[in-house]
Length: 230
Ligand SMILES: NC(=O)CC[C@H](N)C(=O)O
Image (cartoon, rainbow, N blue to C red):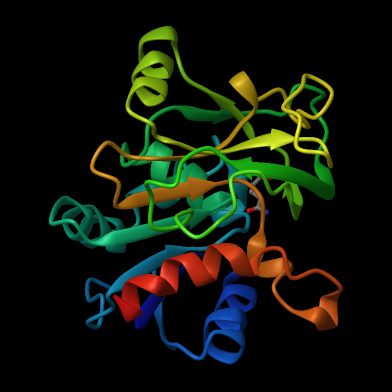
């Protein structure tokens, strides 16, 4: 499959995701500069993690206005697949492509450590192959990852099965103690109502090779690539 990875000023996980897609998953990747208007025929768009525009104002609030986002919004409206990881997730909520918002972590500190998370739905491209009982160990690295949605939005995303992942402990229990950043109902990632836009805060691209000591992130990329094989 041909992936397009968007690079914003301040992106810093772009080469990590490109490495995994190209060298681990054997896919074609085109680099898309944020000022471009051409998605270069990419079939799947990824907004990577990082500190776009220095996180000024709010993480993702400025990147959301980059020229390429007009194309990404149109691509998504036609059913195109878009994934945002960490800062990418923040940009997608700012752009209104995903519900909710990412607030400052509850403890007001930048958190950089492994967490565990469990998928909540088999009805999504990014989670369909993941064992729902499995607690995936995935690196977390953010200052604004505290997922928030107001009561109506929260009810809608639960009713419509839009929660992709919740933070849990190593044994898979979803508890207050296993919530690293204060996210409402331990939500780590969501999809949109039409199930073609995906976002989550943890970084599977940093945990997809035995070389780095953790391959739990592969489950997500294998799930996505089942689209190519379908
Ligand atoms: N790793 C990231 O993408 C970080 C996202 C954002 N800069 C934050 O700190 O919340």
